Length: 242
Image (tube, rainbow, N blue to C red; front, side, top):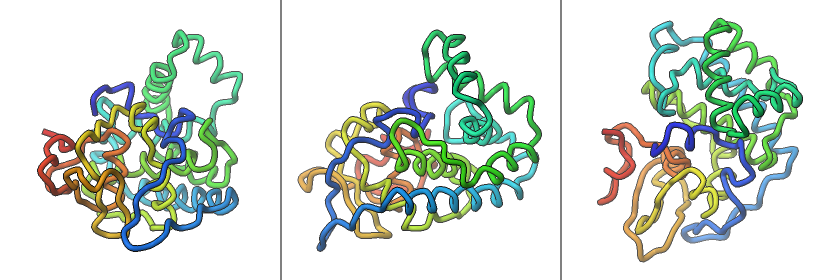
């Protein structure tokens, strides 16, 4: 990630993951977009699945670094349930304290909540609110993206081989767009994202392919740097952690 404050809040802005922009699909038409109800069902399922994963983590894993620079797994999971635990007036007050900076506010709250809540409480906050209607400004797709990407921030960093179901992953890949890429400081200049596990690509056919699993390419689009060995292509080092 380029900046510890600018790349960790997936779904906390109208431009995350981005405005509608056609992704290129090899050999077929683009799948129909899911309805709001379908996205809500997918989001609830993702929260339950992640709660089950987090419930099985060791103390060492909870305190391990995530893909969000400066945040451990503990801070990421605390951040994931912020919208369930804090009312809008409370969030407004927090924003005032942070002098209007969304990133400063979410960083402060994640650190405070991670210190104040036990791991059992953090898991329960996610599991018990699986069907909570909270949505960031980007709507239901961004709500799903918030949970999927932050879940990957944890599982990929810990080396857990969890695969996001395609029906949850695909809408997020298809929503990748230039404005979202700029927000997350994901510089894809000269790069075409090419999934090797589903029929999806993003970018110009004239650009150099960056190949990997669809969920890893989603992380690239959200400004993350991945562990070595997950991406292929001449530009892989640009998107790989040192």
